[in-house]
Amino acid sequence: MAVEEIVIVGGGIAGVATALALRRVGKKSLVLERWSELRETGSALTLAHNAWCALDALGVGHKLKPHYRLLRTGTVTNLATGATQTQSFPINDDNGGEEMGPRSVHRTALLEAMAEELPPDSIRFCSKLVSIRTEVLPDSSTIMVLHLDDGAIIKAKAVIGCDGVHSVVAQWLGLASPRDSGRSAVRGLAVYPEGHNFKPGLQQFLLNGVKAGFVPINDKDVYWFVNHPTTPEVREMGGDPELIRRATLEHLVVDFPAEFKVFAQQSEPSSLSWNEFLYRLPWDVLFGKLQRGCVTVAGDAFHPTTPDLGQGACIALEDTVVLARCLAHANSPKDMEQGMARYVAERRWRATWLIIASFFSGFVQQGSDGRWSTAIKLFRDLFFYRFVFPWIIRIAQYDCGKLPEV
Image 1 (cartoon, rainbow, N blue to C red):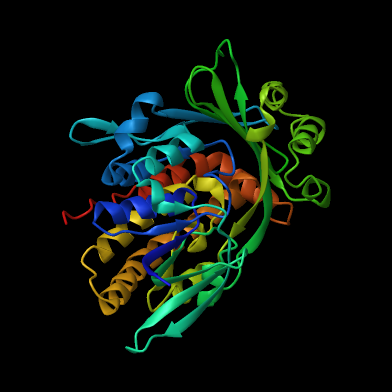
Image 2 (cartoon, rainbow, N blue to C red):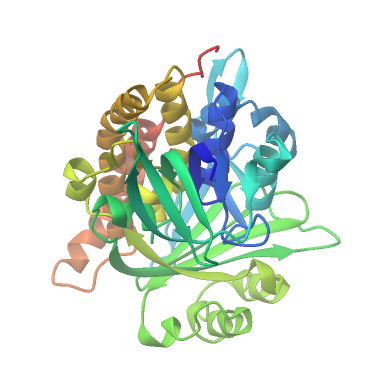
């Protein structure tokens, strides 16, 4: 049986980006994707400055930017008081005169822009990992033996887990399971075939522990979301698009602007999703086993976080560039192990900080029903959006650097 040099588990954004980053530094890899085609949960996402720096390093940023507008401003309206605050998003002019800032993009467009840069045989579909074991070869070297759900076995010298919040690779490493934040979200993409009249920018609304928002992606598509406390009733709808639509219309957006009902009605079933917000405890990231030998993790398998800063995919893209840079000159198992160790050391603190900042932001923005709820909401309305949140967003800006010439 042939032994693969590097196997990447998971063909989502993190997995495909990792394969592309490794290809850019001359490393061949095989991506194992559980589905029969590339697919992404959800319809759209917002990529901040740091994500665009990573995409430029991967050589695909130029393929997406012309199709998506910069997000320069946003508003947050407290529906209980009617007060509206305006936010300005950081736009940097430090990339050869090109404006760099947040843009909302279609998830499939991002995934396809990266995947089409890979050789046709880079991704093996219908390949769901179920278990991992090690095997010592006659020369005393160790390889990983990956068992798939169809009975197939793949051997690899190195493994990178990009298999999401319920990562089999993370479990093998010994990482604790992600925690439930008690919150979840409905997301969708409203399509207006004849065009819409919404102005560019992110608009958000707060009421009774629920945050709803929307942002036009282009002249015809509007990405929208409703973040809400997780209850047994909403958990029952699972991934059924029509149950998601019904719950949104009948419960989640009843007291929100009428546009949200239209969004739910205008969304294709395939774009509707409901997900619980899971996160890894900060100390599990800071002190947990994120690498063993030539095995490590990236993206949500490394640092699942709540989406309150919109940084999940952004820091996953950062991971891929840093990892490829650390492995660029790895020509032996020892080099590979040491490169992965450097990658983990570089990413631990940033991932930990973003998990904490994101959880704090969500806690403040959606309020609390506890004894301190009044104080928290007062802090949110008077200080958080004016001073704290802009500071957090500026700190989140990060340039992961370029990939080395190999």
